[in-house]
Image 1: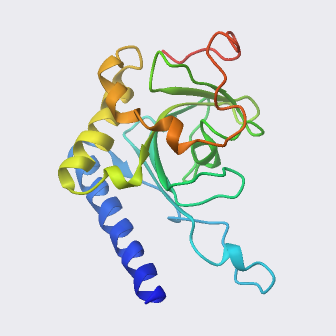
Image 2: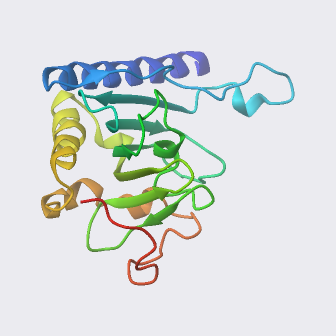
Length: 205
């Protein structure tokens, strides 16, 4: 029964990302990611790394410095997330964005590997990685929000396409991140307000 449940999860994740691939392709974005996941282990003594704990896809048009990404994080002990969640984001680099993004994986919650601004005024999170010369604008979704193709279009693809065009008009995106605080409950630093860290990063326009 345990194996069947694991298999069921893998099939559902595969179906979700396959649907995202198809919709993004129709909108002129090419999927160019490398591996769906990395950082797993086959070694004894590291059993928690045997299972795939995240999946990621990246999409771009002709501009190789401006990329859309979707990252599903099932469980990360460093994140301390209580429920699986999806990170949807725009990645902007000074150079070409590579085929996998550690920065998107960490965006909005890992305060050791980036600077993040999140306030109650917007569902979007603005992150900056100075060494990598990358900026990210992202939002979170509970995995349980995605039940069918319509959810994928309305909650993942359509908002991402909006963010790709502009990060200034995002009031109508509020509902898609209404449970971000529940997703990130227990993460140190998540409750920082925009005023507390004002000027920490330059918001991407």
